[in-house]
Amino acid sequence: MGGQAIHAGLENTPYDQRLALVLIDVQGYSYEEAATIMGTSVGTVRSRLSRGRHKLAEYMRRHPELLPSRFRL
Image (tube, rainbow, N blue to C red; front, side, top):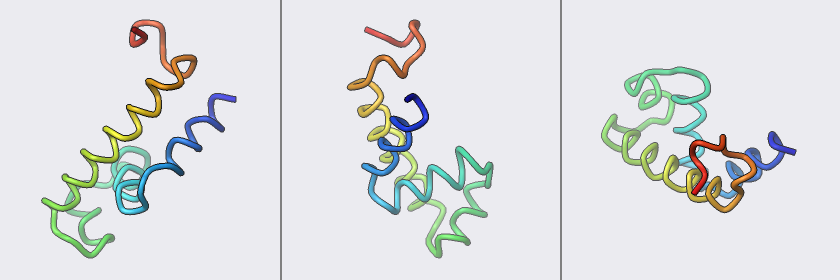
C-alpha cells in the first residue's frame, strides 16, 4: 500500500514539479543536469523542486500512515 500511495501522491503533483522531483530526488541528477534535461534554468528547477516537495509533503501529511512515527503530528 505505501508504494502505491506515494505513487498516487506523485501523480497528483503537476508534471513539471514531478519531473524535477524524480530527476533530482530519485535519480540523483544535479540541478544543472536537471535544468539541461528539462530545457530550463537552474532557478526554475529549484523553484519547481521546492513546490513539488511541498505538494508531496502535504499529500504525505494527509496520509500519516506513510510517515515514520517521528514525523507524525
